[in-house]
Image 1 (spheres, rainbow, N blue to C red):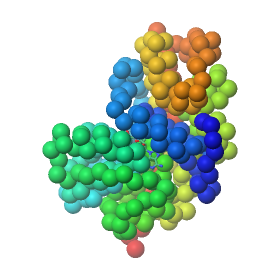
Image 2 (image 1 turned 30 degrees about the horizontal axis):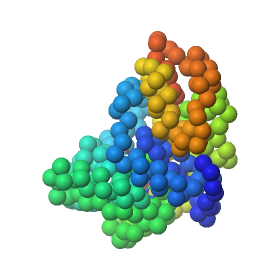
Image 3 (image 1 turned 45 degrees about the vertical axis):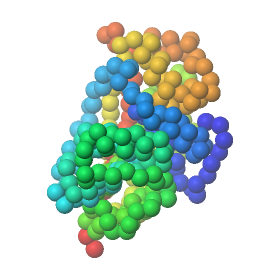
Length: 276
Ligand SMILES: C[S@@+](CC[C@H](N)C(=O)[O-])C[C@H]1O[C@@H](n2cnc3c(N)ncnc32)[C@H](O)[C@@H]1O
């Protein structure tokens, strides 16, 4: 990342593609440009095989909380893919994203789906423009959040389900390259989010570390992935060439059974607005 943007003392969590980063020194406008470009992009081409070692599934938790009357808000929805694939049917689902290109893609996906209970709008998560006490469930997966604003738009008794990428995500890779997303964060984003959710007044707050392994079949797939996902941020944003020597060193140390392994560290937070 290049320039600096401070939004109060809030940690900014910027999500790019299948991963995300959270940083104090991120440039909001650069990131919006990045997401606009990513609006028609798919990660399927890297043939990643993922193995989850932790039993925390956002969509299982969502299913357990939803009723036919539920109103759900999905923050940082991108093209709404997760809504169409994983969200249970209910009265109303609103997907929001700060990228108008993403919302354009989401509306095309909506047309194809024929769903009448889903809508999309452009919205910054740091300046949420939705009614107070309105939603039964807010989902925020791999995007930035302001817990106090989420709290306001939830009905009493409403639920927050949040998943993010933690500071120590891909840490051995970042160590090999001497930096990457979250490298200089004084506090892991999981902890700052957890503290914010508690401070906002939520109850039943749980923070769960999610441990995953991503496997890549080839050096080419792995390199292609690193070039678009902002784990080594300068590289994925196109500011620097990927250092081939360091890449080979990582691959030599982290190939198991012919596949390149990347250890992922995510986190899940579930919480509830008190009934009153
Ligand atoms: C990696 S995608 C995650 C998409 C989806 N939630 C998922 O889990 O697949 C992150 C999305 O968050 C959006 N985003 C990032 N920062 C945002 C912000 N400050 N306000 C609103 N949307 C934001 C991006 O445009 C992008 O579409």
